[in-house]
Image (cartoon, rainbow, N blue to C red; front, side):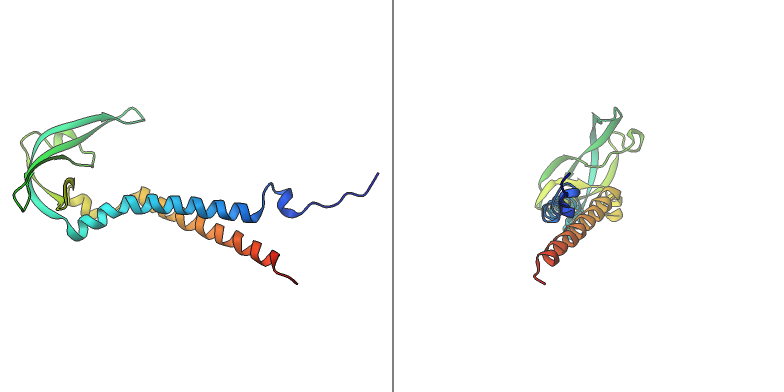
Length: 158
């Protein structure tokens, strides 16, 4: 029986710290983009959104992946510059809270008035999913940074 040569730690664990570090950084960047894309609408509406008096003209009902029915109100309103707009809110609501003909206030993007939310949604800010994505972003980037720094230290002479 011959002596066995010990394998490097990276080979024993199934991958190099460099490859895993780069993978974690890439996943972190993808999660970061998701976080940014979901929170940017809230931030934009908080800063530049304009309010308008709107009337509920309908309800869009769709089936979720879990089988529940989600209702989103369709509003008609006139922008500050006089454009007539009919748009669907991105927030799910109870049918009884938004009957046809109800008047309410909406917050819309002046550059793209079909992007609108209810004032209470804008005031509440991003939801739990955005916080989870943000935390995942930080964890993946930190893990990738640690793995890459280990690679760099192990490659240093001495």
